[in-house]
Length: 128
Picture 1 (tube, rainbow, N blue to C red):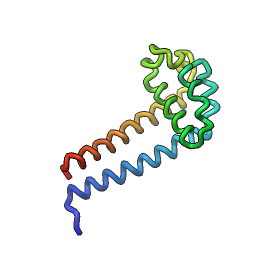
Picture 2 (cartoon, rainbow, N blue to C red):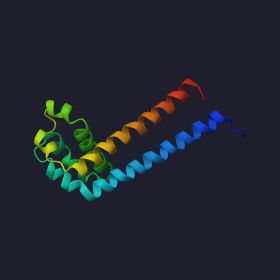
Picture 3 (cartoon, rainbow, N blue to C red):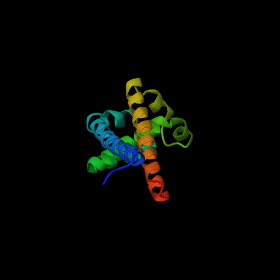
């Protein structure tokens, strides 16, 4: 069975996206196991983060949820500050290097998820 060019491109995009998601999960888990307590200490005045702090004992998935939520709080801080989910001072006191890492993690995660959803839509519509 041979693949035409469109199928090859589609396959390559899918493999790269899936691999990217695996790497992303690995990076998030590494951050969770090395920086979790530091981040929770920085966000001690933020009710949204403190509500999640008990999930950190839920194994790798719990740690993934906590770091993903914190990166969402940092990336979309204006939205969460207005709604009381995160304290503005906690976000302001976050070191720039950690802030950049969290924002990049959130952005890359969103892009990879959108690519995966786009692939699923293409398959569902029968375009490939």
